[in-house]
Image (tube, rainbow, N blue to C red; front, top):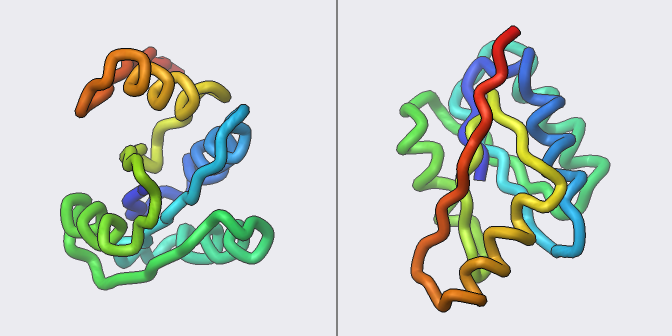
Length: 117
């Protein structure tokens, strides 16, 4: 689930990183939280090309509200949240799920790298 608000400058990189996931099936829920930049069009563009992407457009209510709407539409056994200005490695989902299964955990957590421009 990705809550999206005014994210047009980062959104392509974020979505492309998720589409590059290896060895795993997933659904990607993009929740446009009332953006008035090009984010809604970017979301719609991806949804027309990729059947695993669902787009929800809603009035602005903040990231928690967007995440909660995404949860209502999610159908998978596992849920993760990614911010629209982040991107992930090609094995992000695979590693999280395998870690959960290996340790029979209720929650998995990953590290991050901070990139400076």
